[in-house]
Length: 304
Ligand code: XMP
Image 1 (spheres, rainbow, N blue to C red):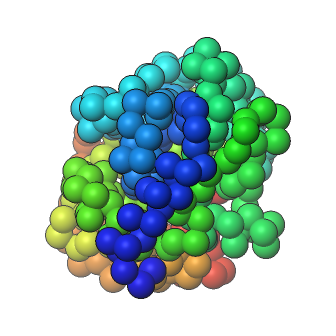
Image 2 (cartoon, rainbow, N blue to C red):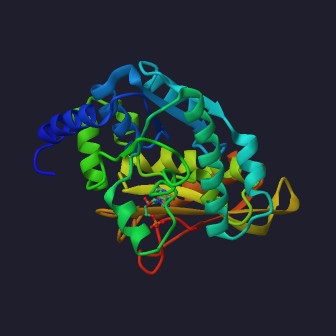
């Protein structure tokens, strides 16, 4: 992106021309959809209907943050967590899990689009999503998934050719709240892909707390590209003098330029110990914490 001001002005004009009616966008609370929604709002104002679907796989306090940040728009908040947990019940295969979540998302979104009678769909797809989906590396549920079944006059993807850093620059220029524009990337299927195996409510609740601790301990001080926690299985441990079969939490912190490759952060040992102590003491069912030192490739950033 050569010039951010020019990009914004051009995209706003394009959206104005493309959309003559109502448009919807699925707002996730992540950088891409937030920036995209703000851009579209500048173009079509109240004809934009951002829909925030609470899948139950959101980060800690995320629904509240999104409601506050987008209260100036026609925001629709839908609590669909029961439907999502039912959809992933018994599923342990990562791609099937993504598929179940993607399909449920489309169903819920479709229902809302019908209620609103939206003519256009706006999506916050960015270039790395496109590349990875093309290569078949991962089924990003926000690429090409929605339009197929839904009948819109058109699909608008203003960030299609941008990388994450460009998107953040656009967010800053649009005056988006820092908590959103500077927020690290977060996968479309949310914490479900960090609850390895079956994503039960119980496991996701533990992952949510662990993610919040990792964010608090690492983001400001070390400014990694991405840092998070995942529950990767169960192991034996001792808590309150009793032997338990508790969760194993993996901490991941990586640096990257564009998410296509990544390197683990060389964190001080005392930081890792502090994270371990907080996670095992603040989350009842966790008895073990490990640090992932894998690069991408051969690993991916997420565990699933
Ligand atoms: P991986 O795990 O493939 O992830 O190295 C690369 C980047 O993409 C994020 N990610 C996703 N983002 N929908 C998204 O919008 C998804 O399904 C998805 N899966 C992974 C991941 O967090 C990392 O930043």
